[in-house]
Structures are given as structure tokens and as C-alpha cells.
Image (cartoon, rainbow, N blue to C red; front, side, top):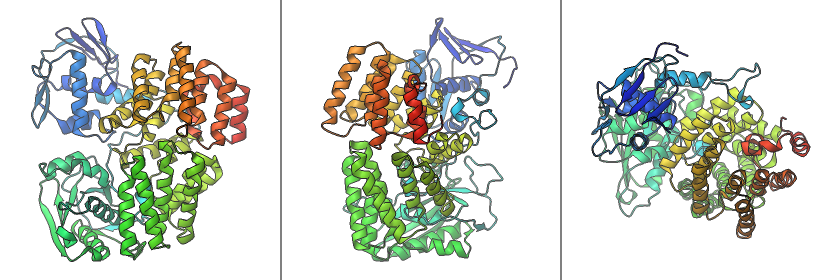
Length: 638
């Protein structure tokens, strides 16, 4: 940590002290989130010039891939906190299409202490002690990585990495230095590629352009020298009014692959564009019906690899050309199933399940479709479906996939998830995750980081959590933020949760997690509306237990007990985990009932091992004999 003399900044009636991370206005403290504070300091330090958006994102969000929209939201919050009208800015001036400039006159006051600039604050954060759950064997904390984020692409969702991708092995590549290297050191040979959803014509199936691009990206992913931005991420930036440079900068990509499906499925046109200067490096037209889609995908992917001067060895080529089905109708059903899996409403998931079933009915040897079916079943957990209903079906589909193809990493990953999350069969979970990673070293498991954290493998857990966030920074799930919540790194969890809400304001999960974080920080007035929002958005499936616990610790016992009654009523309409009841009883101090409900949730297969181990709302139970006995008999560390 730097110990140089650092000034306190003063302008109008505001003082900003980088040493203490404190902002005061008319002598009253101004509450700012960490990123907003870092942004303010960075703008002040560079007040003699216009600071570009890309520079700000690299400096303030260097460990997180975010869009320009997140920057705009943070600036708006900062202006509101400082009492500034954006129409007549006194402090932060927006320079259209370029960035921001701090325009107020600044006075410097003497101050001593650690440098509070974004870089020094990050250094201070990395020196802070972690809770015991994330310490290594030596007792020293594992600092978070400081490598700049690289956005990757494989296909669709986390488990779908392997949906259309074979195992990835080492590759040879002809020497070439990419012209544009966003977020990468000069010695790193990996280049980033974004395959944008292919344009289609009115009247064509809406799923087709996205899924054709997804399949193409999956073939390209066989090269470890290419990192691909997930097509669902690229979809957010595929705007015809934006240049290749703008899209590439937003996606942190060196090259773009863009295409257009001809009307009535009569072929396609594809191009490769270099982001640094917008130059078209290659364009090809592929006439013919989509009955030739398998050959077209292979040909186009090969041309893209050749354009980027990437070569594959013999084993890689065999994986590159591997087809999981030769049945065009089954493949089309698979593409539809994949498309409907990602929006993740209950109706979408049900559509996804129906199309996966259609795919395996058309081709009973379609291992990849069975694995996808297993994944789709598991996603019903978010919609009030009991584990007793979907877990057996998810397990059976994954097992069927391995009956057809024992080397399918995706299926092993799904079995690892079930063994860890639902069965608490930790030995089996470890074996399945290990086997999946042997088959596909680049596979990203959404639950693997929490599995490692559960067993105190903090260093590996940190790495896996960052890998998943790097891979799918715009996914709607909250597992990455929840990891930091369990690690008691509340500011980092807060930043990530706000990022999810910026992208998915109507997703109940991030609202509930935000309320949990605020509660842990004793910001009860801010936690309350977030819990209520989660309940409203989920029709009572998410958040009632969290709200009841919050009422209890706020001393509002009557409200807490009323929430218990609402849980009972809601449980008659949809499945409600007993864990939600346990939370309220824990808040009320009824420890025996809380422990009984935790055991009941475990029997229902709805209790997450990581939640049980690390949720701070259960801290008052951890020394209880019943809690410790259950921990010991379940195979978890004490």
C-alpha cells in the first residue's frame, strides 16, 4: 500500500478524501458505492482533460467486463449524490461520444495516508484480510487476481459450453500479432473473437440467426488460441448503427465475425472484420439451402481460422469436424431448444424441454441433446418446482447422455452439479467435476467455484469464480456475486449485483441478493424495498424468507410472523423450500425450529451446501449442538 502524501480535494462545499474514501458535502457524509467513489477520484485526478469512456472502464472496472451503460448509470448516481443537475453540470461534464470531464475548480488540502486513487485503492483492497472461509492452508489470504478481464465466447449459457463444443486441446498457430489487443498483455497469444448473431429477414424463424452464429462459435472454440465472446453477450451490442470499432470495444474483441442469412433459407454471407481499423479481412457467400448447414458451418469456420492464421493439429481437426447428429430435423429441434433455454422464463424452459425431447426422439443417439435436456430440467428450480420433480429427470437425461457418449464433458458437469447441490454426495461431485475438466479443460461450471469454496479450496475457488464471470459477464444468474457475499466481501458482491440489475431489472434473484447484502451491512432501510421487489417480481416464490428474517432482526416480530403465514399460504400454490422458513426462525431466535427446517430443506434436496456453510444470517446457529451435528454427519467441514 502506498504511504505517500496525498491531498484532500475540495470544490464548492464538497471535500473528497482518498485516504479515507470519504466524501462530505456541507460537512455531511455522502454515501457512495466503491465504484462511484473511484470514478470521482479518477475524474478529479484527470481534470485537465476529457477522459474517454474506454479509459475509465479500464481504470475503474479493470477486473470486470461492463458496458458503457454501467458507466452512464454510475455517473448518474454520482451526480445525484453530489446534488448536480445533468442539464447544467457544475462538476461532471458529458462530452458526447467521447467521455467525461471534471470541470469544477479544485483546491488541494494537505493529507497523509494511503493513496486513494483507483489503483491504490485496489491495492488496499487486495491487502485487506479475507474471512476464514477464503484463506489458504498457511492462513494468509488469497488476493483476487488483478489481470484485466477478457471476454470469452463459446455458446449460450455456462453449461452449454459443451453443447456444441468438443474437448479443447493445445493448438499451433502461425506467428501473428493482432492489430488490436483489448485487455491483453503483449506476450499473450490468445486473440478475442466475437461472432455476432446472423441477420435474418422478416418472416424467418427468430431463433435461427442466433443459433447458427452460436454453432459457428462453438466450432471456433476448439482452438485455445481463440477466445470467443458468448453470442448472447454479442447480441446486446449488435446494432447496425454502431461501427465495428464500437462493437469490438464494447465486447473487448479483436475481430468480429458477422453474417446474414439469405431470405427463405437460401444460403448465407459471412465476413471477418478487424476491430482496430474496421478492415474487412475476408468475405464469403455460401448459396444453397440450410439442408447443407453442417457442411456450411465447417467450411465457414475453417475459412475464419485460416483468415486469423490459426491452424489445428490432427486431433483437433477430428474434434472440429465431429457431428453429434446427422439428422437435420433433430439438429433444428436442438437449436430451438438451446434458443429457448436462455431467456429463462418458465414458459421458455418448458419450450426448451419440449424441443430437447423432440431432438432425442428424432435421434436417440443425440448425446448432446440429452445433456441439454438435463440442464433445462435443472432450471425449473427457479420457478417453484420441487426438486423431487425435476432432479430425477435431470439425472436420467445426463446418464442417458453418458450411455451414448461417455466422454461428453457437459453431461459429467451436470452430474457433478446434481451430486453437489441436490444429493450432497461430495465425493461423487468431485469425481464428476474432475472428469469433466479432464475431457474439456476450458469448461466453465457455474457451481464449481462454490463447491471448491465449500471445502476451503479458496485459491482454486477464486480462480474458477473469475473464469465463469469472465466467460459470461452478462448472464442473468447471481452465482458470481453470491460467491463474494458468502466470502463476506460485501462491496465486491454489491458491485456485481448492481451490474446484474442494470442488465436485468426485472430478475428477482439480484433484488433478493442486494437486500441480503444491504442487511449484512446493516443498511436495513435499503434492504427492505429490495426484498419486497423480489417477492413482487416472482409472485412470492423468491424473497419471503429473506424479508421475514429482515423483519425479525429489525425488531418487527409481528411482521416476521405474518411473513411466516404468507410462506405457508404460498407453499400451497408452489414449492417453497423449508430453508425460507429456517431463515425467519433464525432471525426470531427460535434456533431449534430453524435447525429442524434446515434439515427438512436438506431432505427436500433444496438446501445449497455453500448457503448452509456461509450464509451470515445463520451465524447465530453455528455453535448450536444440533447445527454442528448436522454439519458433521453431512460431510461438510466444521
